[in-house]
Length: 270
Image (cartoon, helix red, strand yellow):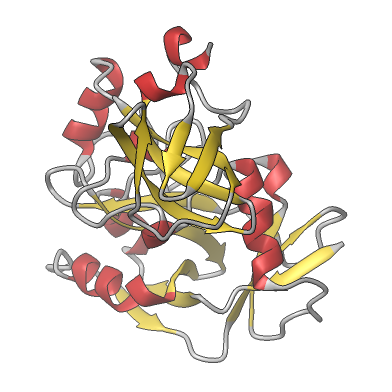
């Protein structure tokens, strides 16, 4: 079993009798029906439907634990609490808690399956972490191989659209729960087929390009590099760039490797 502690994660606590209904009207996924022992992946959007932060919500008794990118924790909490009004809800950052990810074998007690993909493994939010058997870089290679986005490393605040990042296929959006902040644009992009770009796993032949390096095909810009480790990365690419042709990024050559879970138009998937 591979177990990695993820130092770039933080844990927020959401308490109060209105905690579920409060979040239900603000985040992209349904938080009212999370089964015990499971987690739910969701995002906080701008009113215009652009990504601000994403997180895993884990029910724990009379509270919800929010596993969130450490650099976005305070911003996400402040944004959410703007809408508190008279809701009986409180939020706080928990010190002394760790987030761990595991893959390869059985899930330990207290962990929850990663709600995005079974192959991703499990996650554990705990004040008593398990001994690590892998590094955060090992986990990065694991999630890059699966094509899983990693917050602000792959998305841009107030610019990225959820469906570009696979939130539909990766169970990060509820299409049945009703209104939430940014819901209108998210629904419109799905039902009108407005997505023209996707975050796509790539193999890298050459040195890792810095984040933001343009990706070109035959001299035309078709995207940009996002996160990467070793010879694996994720790039934001136009769908039209996935139908063949060499992709260049700085001095490196990229090969797009859309995963099986990713739903692409036939013209792009072929």
